[in-house]
Amino acid sequence: MKTWIMMRHGKSSWESNVADLDRPLNIRGIDDAHRMGVFLTSKNLPIDAAYSSPAVRAAHTALIVTKELALPLHKLRFSKMLYDFSGDQALEFIRCLPDDQNTVITFGHNHACTSLAHDLGGVTDENIPTAAAVLFRFNVSLWSSITTGKAQCYFPKMIT
Image (cartoon, rainbow, N blue to C red; front, side):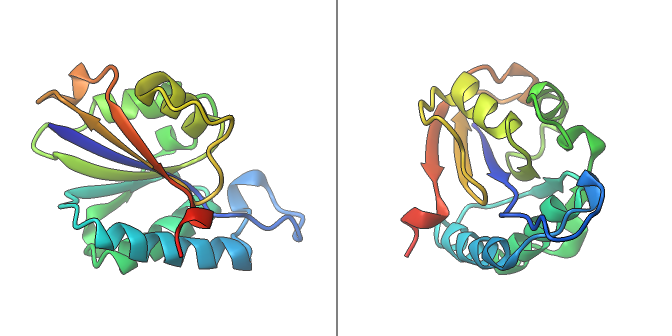
């Protein structure tokens, strides 16, 4: 069994005139990341590794959530493949993970998150909102074998 927690970065700020890669989180994005981190902690998932897009908004979301999860910092890595907006590179990244990792969390971007939630989990929501988590469970032993699986969506507005 492989478990993938796919998170979209928190709400970003458009106040500064910076490159897309350098756009930070806004206050709501920071608050939602904390809320989702606390919520995911309550799920007691044995997370083996965390991976994030190098974009500032994704990296900041990853740092907040992994801190709430008490995941050691050395288990968080960054990959340009997760700075993906179609989902193709992110899926390739997941399919190349080491098979000794059974549960991973990633931090990425839309439309990749929405596309992957639809294609892999049959999620019919029109859009995966910022700071949302999609929990995929794949009944396979190899990451390279994932095709479709069961998906549960958790949105910040659903978490009290």
